[in-house]
Length: 344
Image 1 (tube, rainbow, N blue to C red):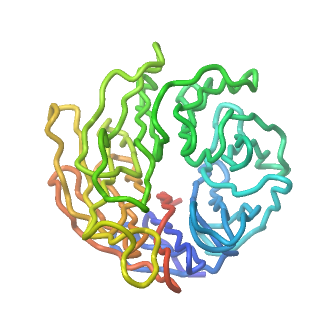
Image 2: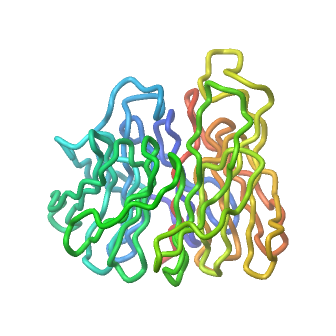
């Protein structure tokens, strides 16, 4: 075990398959931990000081994989070791993962026909609830700060599902074209959804790309934060900044070498700040931004890029990149899930 004096940033490498720990202050690697293939997302549980890592496919990615996985990995981030590997069978392809401090549960989105949210008791580590979301392919989701509702983005359905977590029932559907990343404001007043979903078999031009803003009171899209290209990850910092990861293509169609992710060029981080009106800043990041996290104080943003397998550290006050972290991989895809782990 290495001494960890500072906060850490944990980063998944899908093709590692690994979780790499970086010193969040010095931006230096601390440890590379092997995990079952193929990991996708991370979530930090501050109550127990544990990380949870979903294992979604045996290899590959959403539209090109070799089979769905069923595991959830429990990790000690201080000792940099795997504590346990949970089998979520019969559930398949666990992806998004979030802690629910109101109920002291761990929620996981799973693909299926239809997909669902399942709840894992973090003490017994058993699945205790299952809530269908009425759509296949739910990838990411958010919980409202009051713990009453979940909103799921659904790749294959023209709506975002609203789930009542108390009753365990689908409560509403908000019309949104097949969607990607999703985030919620600190006050719970708005949910931000990236749409439309990524399609890499066609030209990169996308009509209406951006981030839909849903008013959680009326459950209607009230505006769109525009983008020039596809947006995948969306994140809201503790200071209310909306961060969106925008893809850039070097050319249309699949790139040489057989990759199904298109000819990716360096992407952009769009920073929509409350005091900046409708003119977001744009900071260059790695190729195919896929996940965004931020420091608890909202000063720094972290953007993982799956094709370049990097994490760009962005100073959100200065609006500039201050470091680029290299994430080890064994091919494609590379860097994906992120979790910020405060020091003890």
